[in-house]
Image 1: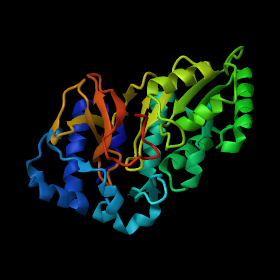
Image 2 (image 1 turned 90 degrees about the vertical axis):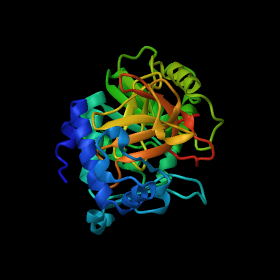
Image 3 (image 1 turned 180 degrees about the horizontal axis):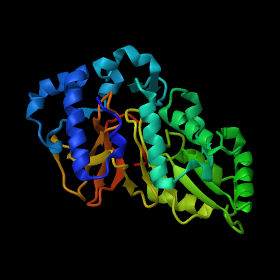
Image 4 (image 1 turned 45 degrees about the vertical axis):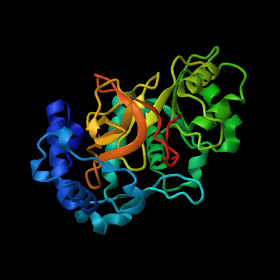
Length: 333
């Protein structure tokens, strides 16, 4: 299967052609997906349009090895685990080719923010230190390393004061900064400062929340979260990152919770009462995601997130479906 053209997609026609090609490959080589399609009574050779492709429920990643058979011998390359509380069944993503993940998140970051070398990239993700097999941790480590700035590193929970001092020093030196943080940790950080972080400062900072209260604080809406964070950090907009263990690509929001996908990723909305029916733009339902970078696993995932899409290809995440497990990367309800 040719991987090189996935990250060269520029048009809708390119995307649809590649999506159908990958579907046929995975329908033949991914045993879990193949059996699922068979149980649905769908003949893969009759799937001629993207909207005919069946999406695999994300729950399969908790109990099955969702990987193409040609890659089974490479399973030791990397296994990413979702975060979770004690006793919670965790998703496992068997990634046989880490270079695909690296190409995906590097190119995606470049599309939305440009060269990492222009930033000091700070990471405040305390809860993720407990999950060394986190795909987010892997991505952040790579992005921080590629920035080549001494300040680019993980900051632990007990280093809140040091993180704030670092931010203020970089801003006073007119530097460009990106701070990635899990929602509850960013809120904790704002309680350590009573003044706008950027008051009197000349540098530029982007605050990117990765979602997830994980039961550590009272749940609030994203609007409330962003309002608090933007006021405390002195920025007009709070950015967001949307990703999950089961995918190899991310979407980013540069404000107001409106996410944009890279060219090789697309989001659809399914009817919560009819999983095989898609809803038009603007209507709320469950999110289905096509991630063409996930070529050796499954590129067609039915998530438990609830949201809506817009005509320009952007989307919003409004919460989680009832009775679905809380996940470390889930966004606020």
